[in-house]
Structure formats: C-alpha cells, structure tokens
View 1: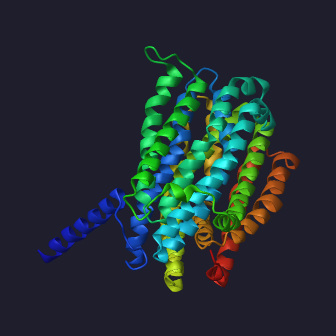
View 2: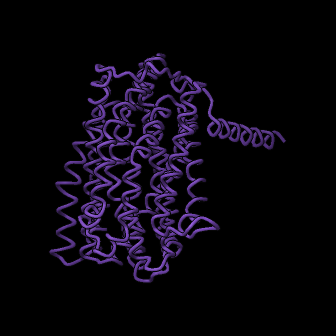
View 3: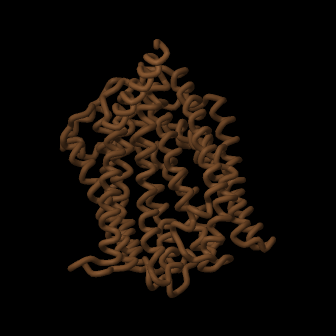
Amino acid sequence: MSQSLKTNTSFSNFFSVLWQAIIGKETDYTTISIRKAIFLLAIPMMLEMMMESVFALVDLYFVGHLPNSSNAIQTVGLTESVLTIIYSLAIGMSMAATAVVARRIGEKNPEAAAKAGMQTIVISVFINVIISIAGLIYAKELLLLMGATETTAVQGTTFVQIMMGSSMIIMLLFLINGIFRGAGNASIAMQSLIIANVANCILCPLFIRGFGPIPAFGLTGAAMATALGRGIGVGYQIFHLARGNSSLKIKLSYFKPHWEQIKAIVKIAAPAILQFVIASCSWIFLAELVATTGGDHGSAGYQTALRLMMFFMLPAWGLSNAAATLVGQNMGAGHMDRAQQSVFVTMKYSVIFMACVTVLFLTCGKYFAAFFTTDEQVKVVAVEALRILSYGFILYGIGMVLVSAFNGAGDTWTPTKINVIAFWLFQIPFAFFLAKYLNMGPTGVFIAIPVAEVGITIAAFILFKRGKWKKTMV
C-alpha cells in the first residue's frame, strides 16, 4: 500500500513539474535542485527547437508532393542552406543575449537584463536590413552559386526572395527567444514557436495547393506560409515583452542605443556569430559538393536527410541550451561548482536522448525518408545519409552541451576556434578528398560529417575541463 502511494506521489510530482515547465513560472534556478532546474528549462527548450525544425519539414512534405518534386526539394534545401547564414547571425546574437541576460538575472538585476536584451534587438535590426535587400536582389544567383541547375534556380527565385526578404522575422524569432531563455522563461519561447508552426501548418497547404479564392502558388506558397507563420510567432513574443508580466520589464527608453552596452554585447556576439558562420559555410560547401557530385537526386536526398536529422537534433540542442542558461545564471550568482555540475548532468541526459535517436535512424530511416518523397532515387540517398550521419550522434550530443556551456558563460571564442579547425581545416578538405579524389561522391561527404563532429566533442571536453571559461566576464 505504501509503495503504491509512493508511486502515485512520484507520478503526481512529475506531472506537476512538467506542467510548470510548459506553462512557465518564475523560478530561481540558482537555488533549486540541478535536476529539476534542467527539467524545467529543457522541456520547453527541446519543444521550442523541435518546433523550429518543423518549419522546414512541413515545407519539405508539401513541396515533395508537387510535380517535379526533386527540383522543389532541392530549392527548399539549398535555400535553407543559404539561410543558415541568417540563422548563424540570429543564433550568435541570441547567444549573446542569453549570456548577458542570464548573468544579470543571476546577479538579481532584472532591469539591467531587460536593457541588455533590448540593445541586442537594436543591433539585429540594423544588420538585417542589409541582408534582406541583398537576398531580394541576388536570389537566383544564390541558388546557382549553391550548385542548383538553371531550371531549379528559375523556379526557386521567388521562394528565395521571400525567405531572404523576411530574414528580419527569423532573426527576431531567435533573438527574443534567446532573451526569454536567459531570463529563465523558456515556456514563452516554446509557446511562440508552437503558435508559429500551427499557423504554418494551416497556411502551407492553402498557399501551395490553393483553396477557394486562394490560388495555388506552388513552391512560392511554402515561403509565404513560413514567413507569415514566423511573423505571427514574433507578434506573440512582442506581446509578452510589452506586457511585462515576467522578470523582464520593458520600457521604450531601453531601445535607445547605449554604446557601451552595444560594445559589450558585440564583444560576445561577434565570435558567437563567427562560430556559427564557420559551421554554416561548411554546410553550404558540403551541400554544393553533394549537388555537383550527386546531381539533383543526390542533392534532394541529402537535403531530405539533413531536414530529418535537424528535426531530431534540435531538441538535443534545446537540452543543451538549458546548460547555457544554468551556467550563466549560476556564474552570476557566484556558484561556479554548481555551474559545472549542471553541464555534466545535462550531458548525461543528452547521451540518453541521442542514443534513442541513433537507434531510430538505423532502424526506421527508410520509413522517415519515404514520408517526405516518393522519388526512389532520392530515398536511396536519404537513407544512406541518415545511416552514416547517425554513427556520430551520441558524441555530437555531448559536444552540443559543452559548446552551449562555453557560450552561456560568455566564452564564445573557445568554440569558435574549435570550429575553425574542425570544419575549415579538416571537414571541408576531407569531404572534398573523399568525394572528388576517391570518387565516393555524396557518400564521402556523409562520412566527413560525423568524423569532424567527433573531433569537436573531444576538443571541447578537454578545454572545458581546463576551466578557463570560469574566468569570463560579461
């Protein structure tokens, strides 16, 4: 009887904490148990990241069932590869926002946290005006540069123009969520992505296939739906910022440029942006290498595999983001040992999650690929890519937690240096050698990816143990 009551109490406590994580509640993450802190932060962050990956998967699903789907899939995939530059800027800025906001929250200074968060928005708006204009003018050239055929480039120009033209929305979606995460309010970040995805799932079939008075826009409709869906998510974020019902109380005066604060943010953001630009440029090169050695079907298969991989990898990234917030807040509170312990506990959960994903990809890869395309040649390439990529998932998960820990501490230079060596000095030459000189084609590219990621994890672990990150000031 007592055992039954104990079990019921455990279940009751679990669902109570789960509900708290989903709806959000002001919590001091520097004083509660580390396991509970990780759970409260990780659940909404994992769901948030999963929702972010759904955008590309929804687009991929609907355009994958259009006539000449290989061209459409290639356009979506190559555009996403180009957009990784935008994502890099957005993620870099959001990491700076998370690090600074988390440190100020840990110091029990929410006003300084709010001011810092708003200054990151000021910087981001300025940067994105330039990017949007460039994307609108050079859309076709970007696709051709990525290795797309002339036919694919012509068909996908409008799609790229809409996606690049709406880059401000992408930036704000990532950035404001980074501010909320730093403040420990991960539930609002999750909710904004859920709302954005529900809107995208409704609008995608309407705009792609048409309905009633709405014409069928085809591939272009996917971009329209995604831009509008993300825009609705940003609207939800802005509503909560303006409402001021959390630790972040926003005032219009906080948007006035504060040059000393901007300088401090840029000092953290610049290497964080460079860190992800390095990785993104590597992915872009690999996408171009697959397109030139594997043709339209090879490229479409690779892009399908990447979208599937990111759908499962982004939740692990969300889990690692919990470590970033805990490191930042605990360092602000002066709890260095607790900051380090948070990383190792998060790492353990990441290993369990990525092991499950590895098993899924090795056993069900062909079913996942078949869901997104009916083209047999595309499916064969996608399944091979999923199998090879999955071999490095467990170590990749560990690496993500360690990198997030560095970034959460404000030590954005360490993972940047690791990325330069791993991606540009090793992964790209290695992939080129396998694909071109050994005539392995796309398979050589697939092999180079997990090998490089393993190297990143080993280097990050060694440097994390040395503890230089503990001395970072933000």
